[in-house]
Structure formats: C-alpha cells, structure tokens
Image (cartoon, rainbow, N blue to C red; front, side, top):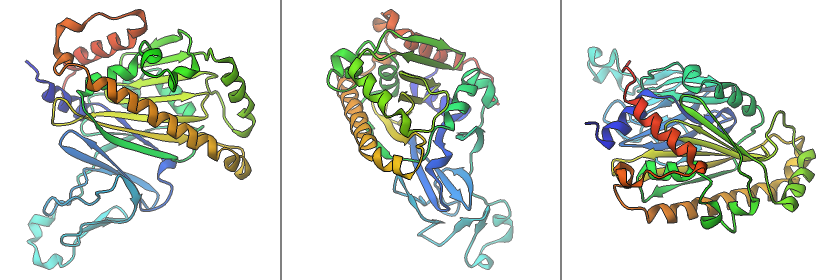
Length: 344
C-alpha cells in the first residue's frame, strides 16, 4: 500500500511542475525559492539562463539561499563554492582529490518551457506537452499576457496538501467562506474542461457593477485572448493558476511537507501586460488591491482547511461530491492514475 508520504514523493519526482513565469526573474542574479517535502528548489537567472537546482552546495550540503526571492549569487557562505556561467567554481581546488571533483556539480532539475512558463521535474514520466494535453496551448497563449511579479505570499497551511488543493478546486464554498472577498464576484455556474492531468474552470461574473468597472480599465492593458470572467486552471499535482479578466494571475502551489497535516503554500501575483508606463502607474493601486484581496482569500481558505479532520484525505467517509465539485472528482481520479505510471 502506498503511504501518503510515498505518494507525495512520487508525484513530486515524476511530474512536471510549473515553477515560474520568465518575467519574474528578469535580471541576472534574480532567484526564487520554493519548498516541497524535505527539499527546496531554486530558480536562478544565470546571466539570462534560468537554472533550477535543489539549493544545496555539493560540498557539505549548505543551503545557498534562505530568502524566498531576491537577487544575489550562487555562493556558499561556508567554504566559498559558487556557480556562475553554467559552471561550478571551487576555491583552493588543489586541496581536493581530482577524482572526487571530476563529477561534482550543482544538482539541477530537468526543465522545459511552455512559451514563457518554466516547468521543472526531477525525473518526469511524461513529456511536458503530453502531461498538459490541450491545456498546453492555453497556457502558452496566456503566458504572453503576463509581465513581472507584483506580490509573494508564502506560509504553511495547517492541513494536508490534498485538503488545501481540493478546497482550491471547488467553488461551492465561496459564498460561505468568502462572502466579502471572492464571493463579491458573484460567479456563475461556469464550465469545466478536463484533460488527463489538468482541469480548467471558466465562469462569468454576476456582479454587474464590478464587471463594468473591470471592463472600464481594459483599455490600460495590452492583452490577447484573455477570458472575460473568472478562470481557474489546475495542473496536476500541486499547481493552480487563476485570474479575473486576465488582468493579473495568481500562481499557487500546494506542495506537501514531511508532515501529513501541513502544506507549503505559496501564491504569487503576476500582473498583466500594460500598454505603457503611464498605464502601469495608473494600475498600481489596482494591483495592490488585487494582491490584498488574494491574501484575504487564501487566509480564509486556510482558516476553514484547519478545521477539517486530520486524516480526512484518506477516509472513505467523505466521498460525497456535488456537481460543483467535479474538479475534486477529477483530482482524486488523477491521484489513482498517477500510481499506474511507469517510473522512468
């Protein structure tokens, strides 16, 4: 029998994970650190090339970075080992046995791109386009509507990652948990679209006044093919990407921890492409408001997820699903199907 921790490790290692958008790390030395299970993964701009590695110096296992985001160098504070321009640099190399250093390297992950979205995997069981299916084209198209990073929100959810993820997948709870935040959109029933490993939910806004305001600022953006409503994209196993009108995107990760009842949660607000500098300035308050709203929504989600019984994700007692919870049924099916994939 596969334990929850073993399943989480398998999902982490054998699937592709959307880590970031190219525009989040525009300058050499920019980095982003994410936590998953007992590891950390860092995306680093190495003179224009984005590299992904496990944040550990190959000498003694010291962590290169401790901050979530920033700009710096891949330099170990312990003994000065560093990485730049695609190569590992070792001070006093003559003090080490040549045979020991011959194959020493930064422990990098495999990477692939969907337009401007960077994916990474430890040992993928599928090609990226096969894992994403028809969602590959959707992601690629909307990636050109994103420009930069506006907010980073990361902390520990006190619940199983599957509980946190299932909460994010269904709109049934919105009027009860988010009456003064996400519930203000008054979302319609919407339509689900499923592939083998992804799901997309698109829903119109029922709040006429808010819809009018959103349409009024469209002239400040330079977007193509954005959905005129609320869109939530799920990428199995750990990632969500949601947006209202395509004006900004919330890229969310629900990574497992070593504890069965904790989740490494993060959400980053990625603003849409604006027409010019003046438009960006005019939208500054809008993006700050969007970031604050997202933080409120996820705080409310965390509060309700904390109240769910420990072990609920592995119990057969809680299998009742409404028609608004189809994405949960799809997620649970993916969990079962993932166990049948051949290990690479």
